[in-house]
Length: 604
Image (cartoon, rainbow, N blue to C red; front, side, top):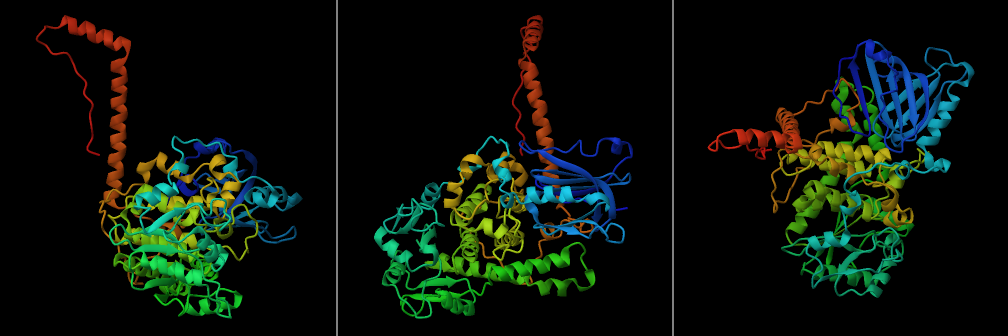
């Protein structure tokens, strides 16, 4: 029998294995499923879950328009699976009508969150046909002309998460505009670049007509625009896509002058251009019309950061999944982990971001790009901004950072994640955002007091990256979100996060406004994020810090006392209570003070 296990539990998904009494199992297995507002039951069925840790487990599966929920009917051990359909990448039939062997006929489900599920059914009468068709239909709604769940849900929260980020407010927080940088609405109808936001910050001396000419020389029209400015030395982080140099070595005087304006804005001697790609990839891109900045950019220096492309990252995570699920082989663990190259890729991304942050901190403006400027570029700009600006290390500031550098600037979430799409083999799928969150986690481990948010927030973000419960990560860019009315018709993930803020706070957080963080990007200092990548294995126990555990206990105790205090105040303000107090006070001696209630405040 499996021992009880504590596994991270979000509203999106969890796996729990625990002992239970025989009496509780007499109740209807699926009666206690708590559905979200707008979530509808589609079907339920008796089924066998082939648990990789406990073997075949009989039970019942429920499929809704949001989740797959399984609960075992075993007397000794209860196994519960609660999997959002958005987390499902692939559904396949296992075996056929003539398959031999026990539990050889059923369904194989591949998930995007580092686990796989296998269910067995009886072979008689095509028993899996209906459940396969329904699961396939609701797991991939876009492939069946159905709405995504965020458009169906009726969840309500006190705060709208869509108000967390406003582009002009964030740019003004940074101290913009200045006499060197201005705002432009040249892209207000997404005509200059359909994957950029409408409001852009550009050099003051550059006219909108010049921007249009620069756009013709940058891949997808993604011109260099300001992401962040250093308040003291005025050095900037500028992001864009690759120049369209091609095999013939084309030049564009407007683009060259534009980069000079960026350099001159704070008198940087040489503008550093960080090209995220390996140099061989950048050269190879010339064959398809792309390329990199050459010697014609006289006041610039070019640095290649050797970060691999989306296809390499996808294969690396696949290899990691193979060694962590369902079993971890202890005898060859280190060599197996090394063979995935995952931590090596994390190291390269962090190392690149450190170089960007160091240049800017020392007063040198930088320009960052990869090929199209929406994958590795987003990783580098957001991580370097996290290192430089303590505001982004707060709970709300981190939400702004994701909204700004990833969502607003067009990271292709729909293509990279494949929300509601059955094409699991799509070559555009890649865990670029997962890798970014992993890098953030590495920083929180090295600087445990520098971040206001905790690991639970990072796990929740990744769970809902896949869950398709919220509209936050839908579509590839702002223009597509506007067209599909995401802000009007769906709920933001930040509404959930900010509704229970205390769950995501780091008790060890110490604000330090001027501190620049330089993590150590060395294989000796990087760790595999076990709480995310291996959380589905009940044999890998996650130990919570005793101090953090005590902190949570004190928070619960505070809430209990506050609740009791409110009850006392309500009873004191009731008419019968006031009458009783009045009678008792008139019966007492004038020298006896009447009873007073005071508001209590706890130190927490």
